[in-house]
Image (cartoon, rainbow, N blue to C red; front, side):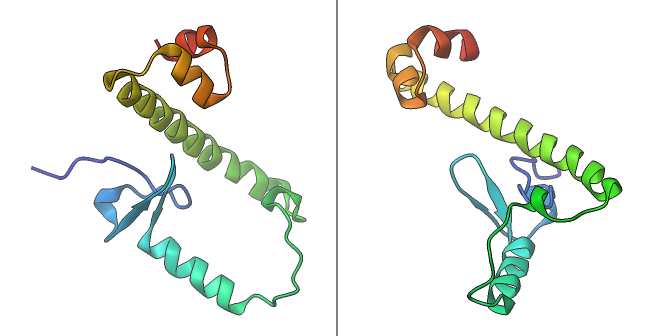
Length: 115
């Protein structure tokens, strides 16, 4: 029986079943291949290089449009992870007030979004 897909890399979208190692953070994941790529980028980057958001780069429309689906998929994964964490908090006895406070929203908003 094949292994279950638990998460996808937030950078390349590969599932955990297709990578050697997956590292998880709060609602995000990164695979070993993307970690290696990040290390090579960081090691080759001049220390005084300005930091700019990816969407601020001078990119052709075609490349910007190609990025929309992966960004949307990452957003969906983060929302699913958030719902799972809220479910875990609730199963451990957290009230909707506590969940709302942790998320910076009202009890009612937390309940409406996650109940």
